Every structure is written in C-alpha cells, then in structure tokens.
Image (tube, protein in one colour):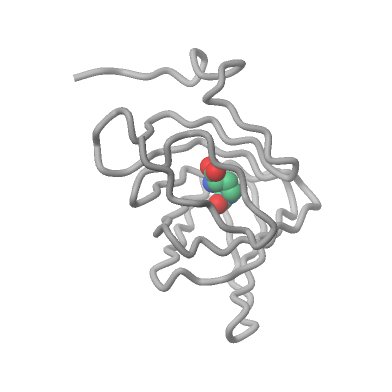
Amino acid sequence: MKTVKLEDIIGTDQEIDGGNWVSRRLLLAKDGMGYSVHDTIIKAGTETHIWYQNHLEAVYCIEGEGEVVTLKDNKVHEIKAGTIYALDEHDEHLLRGKTDMRMVCVFNPPITGREVHDENGVYPVIKE
Ligand code: 9YT
C-alpha cells in the first residue's frame, strides 16, 4: 500500500490551477486504482461550465457552499459541506462557488493528471 500527503502534492505537477479552481490530484491513473481522487478548491464567486462527456465524477463538499445548475433542466442543486453530487449521466452543468469550496473529487476512468477543461468543459481521455 501507499500513502500520499496533500503537503507533498502542493507545488508539484499534480497541483493544477484551472483558473476558477485549483486541483491537487492525490491519486491518478498511474496509481492503478481504476479511479482518480482529487482535493479541489473552487474559488468564491466563480462559475465554471463543466461537461465530462468521457468521465463519471462524484464530488463531496467538505468545506464551503455553492450550487450546481444542471443545464438539461435548469435545476439548481444546493451544495454545502456534507453534500456529495454524482454526475451519473455525464451531466452538463455550471458549478458556482458562493464561498471557497473544498471538494473531494473521484473520477472514473481515472484522469492522468495532465487534463484541463477544453472550451466545452470536457476532459479528453488520455491513454498512458
Ligand atoms: C468539482 C470539479 O469538477 N472541479 C473541476 C476540477 C476537477 N475536480 C479536477 O480536475 O480535479
């Protein structure tokens, strides 16, 4: 087994600044778990368009508050510490941080660590 410490990820190429968010990617495809796990800060006052057409993502909020708007039905989903949301239908959405939000994100398939959102809010599938 292995342990990974957030303090050892910060400042490395596993810390990705997406502009509206900073993602510290704790476990990636190379770790062989079949999913990736990220500790992500969503910045207060931001709105991010996201549409993971190639991935399923579950997001557990452990600090802060905000909302997710699913674009197929314009439904607003309140997010606060203790809320998990699951993008089980590759849902196109807007993610809004009212405050800074700290999120634990799990991706299936795992991301490799190099992905940033393209203009459609999509991550490509990158083969190792
Ligand atoms: C919650 C969310 O999807 N934020 C965007 C960044 C993503 N979690 C990532 O790349 O770690």
